[in-house]
Length: 289
Figure 1 (cartoon, rainbow, N blue to C red):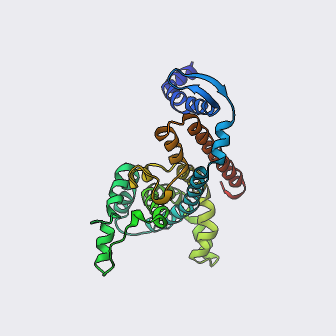
Figure 2 (figure 1 turned 180 degrees about the vertical axis):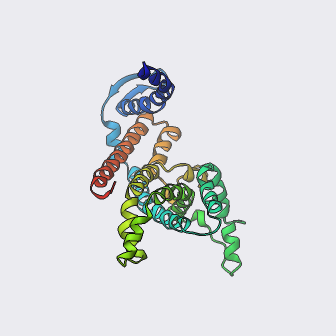
Figure 3 (figure 1 turned 120 degrees about the horizontal axis):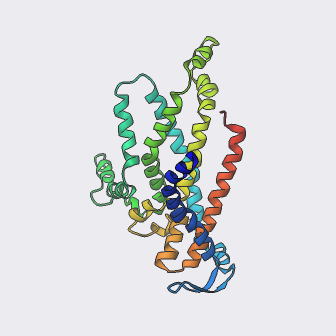
C-alpha cells in the first residue's frame, strides 16, 4: 500500500519526464531516419540512413564538432580548477565568507540570456566597458566580437564565470565533510600544505570533482544561448562560434531540414553518452569513495 502511495506521489513527475524528456529522444531517433516525409501531415514515405550520411560528410558539422570539443576541453578543467582554488580560500578563516559565497553564486541563478546581453555590452566596440578600461591606458578600441580568434576565449570566459558559484558551493560542501583529524595526522608526520592538499584534499574531494566533471562536460556540449545572443543570432565571425547545438538549431529552424537536424541531434546524444561512459569507467579507478 505504501509503495502505491509513493508511486502516486511520483506519477506527476514521471509523466512530465516521459513526455518532455524520454519521448522526445525516441521521436528524434525515429525522425532521423526520415528521408521522404510530409511534416505537416506526419506521413513518412521513405526511411533510410541518408541523413546520417549527409551529416557525417558536412564540413559545417565537423567545424561545429571542432569548436565544441575545444570549448569543452578548455572550459571544463579550467572552471573546476578555478572553483577549487576559490573554494579553498572561502573554506579558510577569512572575513565575509557568506558575503563572497552569495556574490559568486548570483551569476549561476541569473538568466543566461540576461548575462549574455550584459557581456555583449561589455565587449562592444562602441562604449563597451572593456574598451573604456583599456582606453584609460591609451589603447585604441578593439572589435572583440568581430575577431574570430576571440570567439572561443570569450565564450569560455563567460561560462567559467557564470558557473563558478555553483561549482564553488558544491566543492565547499565536500571540503566541509573532510574531518580535521586527517590534516592533523599529516601535520604530525611533517606534511606541508601542498602535500596535505595532494594526499588528503584531492583524493577525498574526488567524488565531488568527478560529479562536476560529468555535469560540466554534458553542459559544455550543449552550449548555444551565449552564441545566439552574443552574435545576433549568428554563429560568430567566420562561424567561429558554430557549435553542435547551433548546427542543429540552424538546420531545424533556419533551413527547415528537420530530419537532418534530428540526425545531428542524435549524433550529439551519442557523443555525450560516450564521454559520460568513459568518465564513469575512469571514475571507478580514480575516485575514492
